[in-house]
Length: 368
Ligand code: PEP
Ligand code: MN
Image (cartoon, rainbow, N blue to C red; front, side):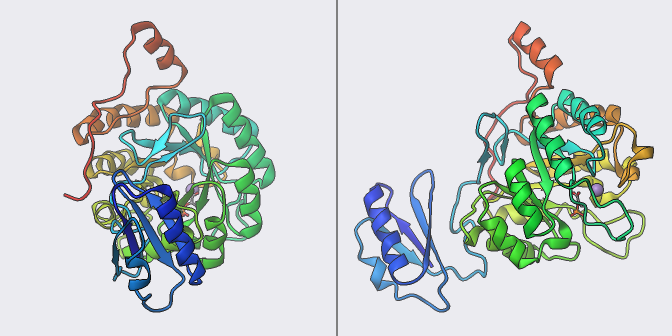
């Protein structure tokens, strides 16, 4: 059920409706929109008697949501969710593309800093890297754990990059929540419901990767798990699914992007690195992802991929990432998106010339 408040409903009226919902034993999720506040109701097994809420002051209508996912749906919130960060102009879901780049795994301080410097200079605002690695083999490198998280925090301090890293279980999530700016839930854990619920109680945004065989509805339901616990800052990520095709590691399903954007207000980014598993396919698929309307990219970059402890063959060399960004900068304005200026070098240049290297901003409409 969804309670739609009138455009001019007061904060007190919204609060009274939420209290009424809670007093009935349900959970109220109040999300203010540009024009009106919508209050989602979860925790109800069956239908709630609409009359109880219908007559309350400030209520415009009570709608029955027929889709299995509620809080993630555009019925609940019509405008796109834009995720912001304290002390930063980086956003996910706004007109600016969110570019996440970094190694598959944090391997050492030297490696992390070498890669971070390059991706920062190229214009990435988010630094990715696994401190806990869910590997197919128990004998493969499993990540540096908390030491890796500490290195990432140093990267944030030095370059101002926002940090995203994966939590593989509830224990690691406690630590990831402490150090990172965004908590990543990996493809293998997309249906780990206790982890999703824990992430839903976290104070940081969640980046949720699509499971290798997950349908669109299953992905949205996983996001619903996170939101139902009160964390409304969820970023979806397409990273390829298993198919019979064997020319790539996975099959990157770019048709998911407009499909999600029709149904949900949540931002969705694309990971062409895990999506293709091949370095030479990362840049072409990044171009396509931006063109199709993705809200951002997540790209693996390594300063010495041949020596990488994981996913070297799909990691770009820093020069290749520069070129990727160069191409993305040209495509972005065509779809009404901007790209942040390049790191230190460019900012200095901008200050001198007064020009920004971003594209032309224009609002996007996902509901077309
Ligand atoms: C990753 O991004 O580090 C990762 C392991 O990806 P996925 O969960 O999509 O396999
Ligand atoms: Mn990887």
